[in-house]
Image: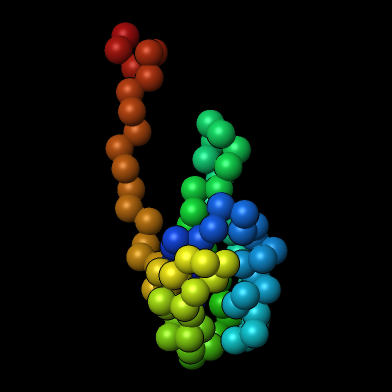
Length: 93
């Protein structure tokens, strides 16, 4: 199960996110999304859990919970939408 975690403190890293969710079951992957321009956290990330039941339990337990002074927004991640690729300079030939 892929889980979206929003409203994260900017100091949170992928390992901290993994530790937060590992108390509910096996975490297969965790990542905090980083802004390419600044190198700073964008304040959200994703956690993949091996077991869907454990994932749902983690969502229920953490959604709205306070973490380092911020109320987390946690829900099942939606599939990534395909966005059209912006045209490149060479595409106009």
